[in-house]
Length: 335
Ligand code: ATP
Image 1: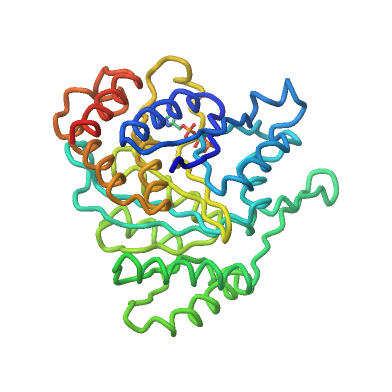
Image 2: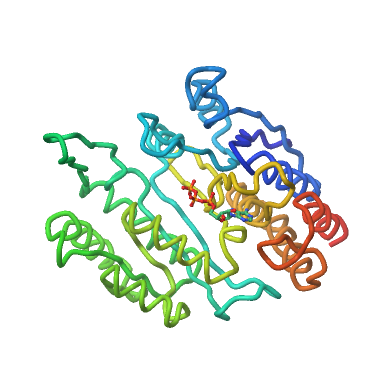
């Protein structure tokens, strides 16, 4: 059976890392039909929208998407394609595993944590207005429904993966109502999972604790904005954004996308590290219940990293995106 998957190459380095991921996923021998759909800054000029309706139609049909990064112009009226996709498809859970990879130089060893980020509300609600000239208001929305849903997702994921501890990250000492509600919901859900240790950490302290010793954490449960910031911080523990995979999960659809952005500084130069999106592809295989293939992809990435001969510039090497993809694909084929 062929899996039909929507492929959104995206902007900047997106097309390069997307074709690298497709190369490696195809090497597993599984059969994929890719429905390629374009979204992002690149489609704005042609179709007048960064998110043509056909993209949503395709994902609603296939239920699974592999996506490269899409760029959002800063400070203009355009809404982020990612925010829009997550909202339209109600992809409420953003899952970002952060695990030390072999052979990758980093300040830390033995990091193995999972960031679970709420994906639909908070300061990403897009509710901003000018109160009077010189004064703007951005509204943070936190609801019982979304907070309970993400907390339940985190605890269920912990149970599924045999994880032992969840740390809810907040700033309820200052935002007593909004972050207070988030914590109330997390506490209520935690009661149903007595085998999992539950703790609460204030976000600034959490950042310091992470930098001191990231191995002290297991699963981090965060609202949308804290989740965005903390997951970039966590990517730094494992060699940077080129190594950090991610997934956006909803009740019906799932969209697999690495943590990094479109990296315009290195776009089109065959310099991008494709490993983040290749590991994201392995998460997609898990979602499709193709665990054996997912393991082969992860082992192939580990093998190439361990050999240390083919590395992109962000990891101190000189290899190109396509070379890395070929090396990983060869390990998948022979593994
Ligand atoms: P966004 O706002 O879209 O998340 P960003 O501003 O966080 O984007 P990125 O596009 O993720 O920025 O890039 C941040 C830095 O990390 C840049 O220097 C970029 O070159 C580097 N980077 C990001 N992704 C990769 C990758 N896959 N391989 C190598 N370097 C990368």
